[in-house]
Length: 294
Image (tube, rainbow, N blue to C red; front, side, top):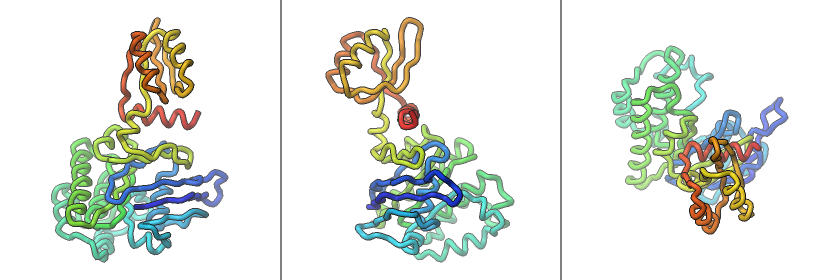
C-alpha cells in the first residue's frame, strides 16, 4: 500500500501549488489511472513518487513506513518527459536499466522484437512515439515495484497502443503470479482507451484530488436525463442531494447531466417518462472535471 499524506509542492517562481495538500491511497499490485487536464499535477505527483523532487511538505508512506527520497528512487521507475534525455545513447540507458536487480533481459528482448525497437543511436534521433515506446519497454522490463508511465501511448498508432496496453496488463499479471506484485500508475489523455486498462482512478484538478476511487465508480459518477425541462427540474429540486453539472436544450426537451441521485429520485424520474442514460467513462471524467473547476 502507498499512502500519500498531505503532499504539497510549488515550483520555484510559481505562485500556484503544483500539488496542493494531496492525500490518497494506492493499492499494491493495482493498475491505477492518473487523470486530469494539463497542469493538474499528474507529472509532479509522479516525480515526487520516484524521488525526482522533494515535496515542500507531506509524506509518502509505503508499507507503513515513511520513505526517503533515496528509497523512492530505488523502488520506483518513471517513463515520460524525455526532453532531458534526447542526447543520451540508447545503449547507455540500457546499461543503466540493467543495473536493477529486477531487470528482465529476456522480457526486454521480447518487447524489442514485438515493437521493433532500434537498439542503437540516441533517443534524440527518434520520433516522439518511438521515444515513448522505448522508455515504456524499459520501464516494463525493469521490474520496479512502483512503475509510473506518463502518457505511454502518446503519438502511437492505434494497433501499437492496443499492443502496449496488453503488455502493461501482462507485466502486472506476471508479477502477481510470481508473488512480487508491481504497482502501475498510468497517466494518459486518451481517457476512453485507459478505461480498459485500469482498476482504480485518481483524478487531479488544479493540484488537488477530486476523485480517488475505482474506475467503475467513476463511470457511475453522473447520469444524463432527457425529457421535459419543467418535469426534470421539479423532481431534482425535491431531492436536495442532486447537483446539476450541465444542461443542454434539445428542442422542447432538455438533456441534463447531474449527480448525487437517491433511488427514490431515480424511480420518480423514470415514472415521469424521463429517459435516464448512463455516461461513458470519458464523459463521466469530463463532468467531474467541469464540476471541480466551476
